[in-house]
Image (tube, rainbow, N blue to C red; front, side, top):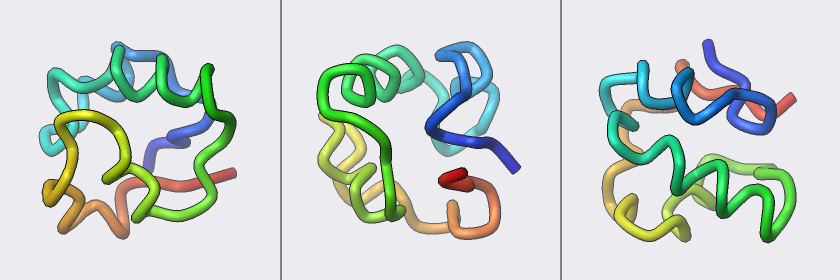
Length: 61
């Protein structure tokens, strides 16, 4: 389980489904605030339609 609101870009990149998107997720989070729901990740450039299967991997604490 990875805390998407506290993880570093490197930690996010370690998740196979998010590999290569860590820095973009961190930048988006820094600019727009915390993620509250999984579907918000689809707003990150490059992640549209790629969040399937992340339900048990990503937490929002």
